[in-house]
Image 1 (spheres, rainbow, N blue to C red):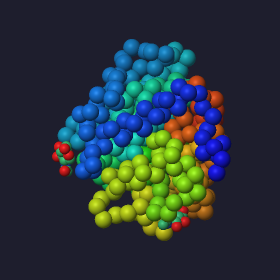
Image 2: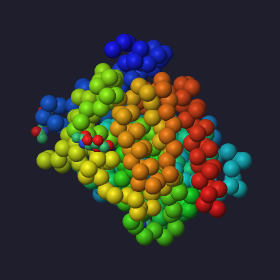
Image 3: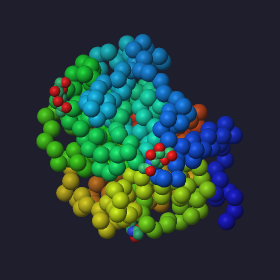
Length: 333
Ligand SMILES: *[C@@H]1O[C@H](CO)[C@@H](O)[C@H](O)[C@H]1NC(C)=O
Ligand SMILES: *[C@@H]1O[C@H](CO)[C@@H](O)[C@H](O)[C@H]1NC(C)=O
Ligand SMILES: *[C@@H]1O[C@H](CO)[C@@H](O)[C@H](O)[C@H]1NC(C)=O
């Protein structure tokens, strides 16, 4: 195995940031299977919403159910050019192995601002409860609750939001969530909200088997095998293994979705993401189930490349999503 196939060419600043992120998960995990949240809160810096426009985006937090800590951060484009438009709504689920991060973490606040500004869309960044304190299926239930709340209370999104043009989106564990929420929402009777597309960013899927990309990239930060095994262990109920339908979504325990009204999907994968083989199986499975899905592969991209606005793949990603959204909006007219 030569070094070129296991290590991407990246600026040192990015390699450094990724190793810090990796270190955070190591230092806050305890041997008894819990997370030191107090220590984590010191490292995972949070920022409040900003009512005044910054770079053309305003944000506010909307509480859905304080007893379950259900809330979302709402990002709205503030530039004058969009004032008369009806804007698509993107429901975004953040990554972090089901156990880390929140819409107020700097990384995700920044990413959602970027999505809002570049895509000219209302972005809802969902706060769901985290593992291991809350395990499967809490995260999926929370996602569904937020969608139902918006279906009934869409006026909180402001007058420009068009909830008949909703997109689900998510990265990593958030991509897993977006997939499962898409299936669940298709079984609900909603009043106005309509999901017309799914933006899947390097979704977190797995299985008991070790794929070629997991073996080849086992020392990549953030999604090395020991980390992903640990995330699944904290997320799943005791007694389940990675053959669970939440994890091995295209495996033998998967639900038959051929009759599910699954949204048209655009799937982003990276050549240096150890999860890439699982993501491609998801792609094949969606196609076999008769779903419309487009696979976009960035050969040099690592897991979570979109954290870095300066990477060329990030601007390519944004322009692909923009085209995808425009296409779905026309289809649905
Ligand atoms: C795990 O360890 C921490 C710190 O030692 C302790 O506070 C916590 O109660 C333990 N949790 C369990 C479930 O054993
Ligand atoms: C919509 O908002 C009202 C008032 O805040 C609340 O009572 C209701 O439960 C909300 N709907 C959902 C589905 O959460
Ligand atoms: C999981 O699902 C895949 C299909 O994508 C299958 O090939 C694999 O054998 C399944 N089970 C395990 C043990 O990974």
